[in-house]
Amino acid sequence: MLGRVENHSLSRTAAFFDLDKTVIAKSSTLTFSKSFYQGGLINRRAVLRTAYAQFVFLAGGADHDQMERMREYLSALCRGWNVQQVREIVAETLHELIDPIIYDEAASLIEAHHTAGRDVVIVSTSGAEVVEPIGELLGADRVVATRMVVEDGAFTGEIEYYAYGPTKAEAIRSLADSEGYDLTRCYAYSDSVTDVPMLETVGHPHAVNPDRALRREAVARDWPILSFDHPVRLKQRVPALSMPSRPALVAAAAVGAAAATAGLVWLASRRREPVIRIARF
Image 1 (tube, rainbow, N blue to C red):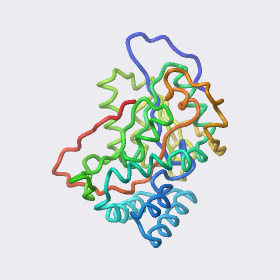
Image 2 (image 1 turned 90 degrees about the horizontal axis):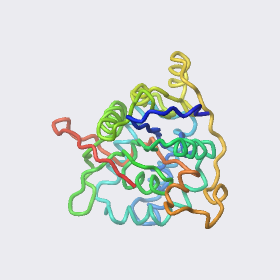
Image 3 (image 1 turned 135 degrees about the vertical axis):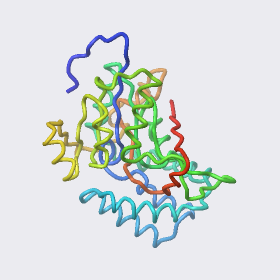
Image 4 (image 1 turned 45 degrees about the horizontal axis):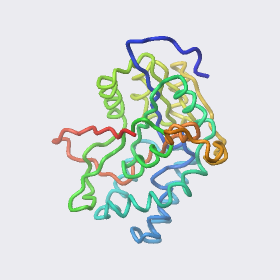
């Protein structure tokens, strides 16, 4: 699928992956709603509303306006949540919730990129508290995710950096500058038309399970269109106790990362310059 590996000694390459419906079969943030309910962070009504949002997302994706409405609702919902509690809930339920919804095709693709010597970078609109543990589990080398403002250990409902639309492309270019990536030889994968700026940034863009708008764009630009439809558990792909010294690399052979959900964030005032912080594993 990836073709012949070229020998370019002066530059590095990477594969940039969106999460939701690209590497995993659902929205990563919404997938944790039941766990947040059990942890006392949300009520039953909120669980039902997030379940409906998950249905809409899976049925056909969400356009910009729908994403904005859901983002506003979820950001207001999580205002005041204890950050450490959120991290603990995600850590405790990560394998139970994420493991069954990893696309086997995406896992194989991540493995192939690592084998070819490329870094794997997850670029997701979801909050870092959700994306970073998933990225580490799956063997991503770096993660770019939305970061919320935290005061006294709790979310304020505002954001420090919003990884959405054009800002994803900006983060990729910044990362290329710092890491020496040759973007003309890099790869990118997404399901959403909102990620066209990210896909345009690299020399090898791919539409994965694309929404209608992205499918039209991909056909017009002659971008490859990939269909992932076979979720698989990590343990079913990697034999137990076969991990090398770097556990994340094994996970990379099995998984990817998660979520195009714009939830749990509030678009901060444009008066502040966003700070892009890259998680490295």
